[in-house]
Image (cartoon, rainbow, N blue to C red; front, side):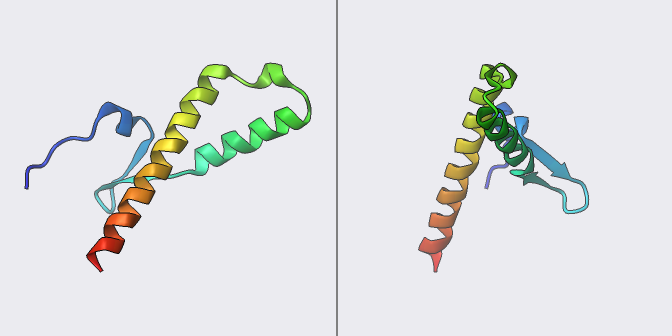
Length: 79
């Protein structure tokens, strides 16, 4: 099997765990962002919501969700 480096997009939100020698994908930062965004919306503080950050985090969340679903489906097929 050929080993390749992950794309820059994948590395943008991956953290590397040196103890296990692998990338760790975490939703903690995304959960904090979405909680703050909901808080700003409830308080009608729309000026605190950054459109570029909102779009970037939406893309990251979508990527993590679809990659989880595809890996879950692949694991289900092997059993």
